[in-house]
Length: 581
Image (tube, rainbow, N blue to C red; front, side, top):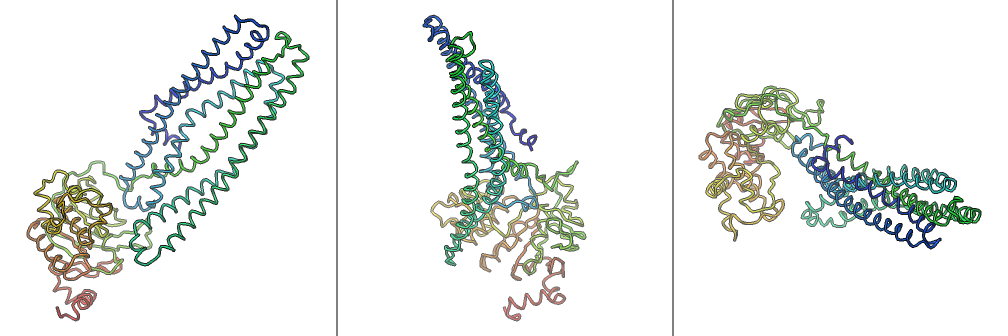
């Protein structure tokens, strides 16, 4: 995990190295200050030596200025390094998600990925800043302060060794009990994000069914769970402050008590071993040591919180796509022919329950093929194997006479345009959405594609025409308009294979017929695969595939299937009321 995350430092290595360096110099300056304060009291103030006062006081000013300078430089570099590290983590996560196959994406929920890219990365950024700054400063301060304390008076310094084990045991107890709670909290955050995301995406359905109270109850339940877990964790963390305060005051009390006795015995003479200046130095070092331990406890808490976040981030970073380019990929798709040879497929490797079984058929380039079947019959699964969104579990899928596994992925998918069941438009203008199909498309090409998709007419009714802004998810256009825009976007790719996955379900039959007629006239060389629920959408196809429970029940033309396929006859009869148009 550490090795994988360290790869995200990259161009911020210099800042990550300079931060501990400046922190070390800052610590050296801070540790010297109490020592020379003691000398100022013993050799200057107590004896009234003004020359010693000015000399030692000047050194103290220099140490303070240098400490401040090194502190500012360490803070600046730590902020740069941690922010850059977080940026690289987000960059690597997002780019890895973009390379995921559909099966990889199925392993993570959308809400979980959002949490990992936001909350978890922020936790990791804070932890990284503490690691390169505070985690360096605290041990060095602890070690150097102890060395200087023993240098001042080794007998009184034994008090620190008595307090440290007590403090360490308390911190270990807090951290060990808080970590499992934080792990549980982050898992609950995923649930919270899912509830909010579902509610916002389905707000129209929520209001249509008057389910606001139910959604509020769901949100309150998850929110209450996070509240309870955080309260439990904070109760444990709250023990840290009184533990530190008790240790600090106990140490100061013991130092003052025993130090005063030693000063009285020695007569406050530097040569006798114990003076007022020495006691002041020891008290200052005690504050540094105990303050350092408090910072260490904060580091442990932050690392406890970030450990769960780091594990979740590494799960995304280390997830390897199921789909890879071959060693010698094919970079040209000859034509739009498609063939399936004994193809079976199951999600998540569940071979015992395949959703597609032994599919075998051939589509010639330029043909129009319809696919009909009940919900869950495997229609969408079948066509998703063509552009290799998933890999077949068994059998071979070929495009242009070449196994899809042998193609360069970008080359294959550039030759296949899909209009999915769930039509997606992005926030931006209509032109910007259409140019997803072809970034270099001219305005004339955009208009022509929209005419073929029967979208030009309604676009021109908008005040801004093709510059009309589309809201996120296309919420400001109707379902049928959204489908037609998605079809136009696919046409701009000028694909060799066009797949329409039930993508005209929201348009009327007249518009559906106009779209199909435009396809036959404008893109005759493009292979067209149409998944539909209406027989009228596929009856003029060159061949029709009828799927039933993941198997191809029959293949043939409209007339042939009316003669030979019972399923097709039943669907046709139900949609035409017994055959009457």
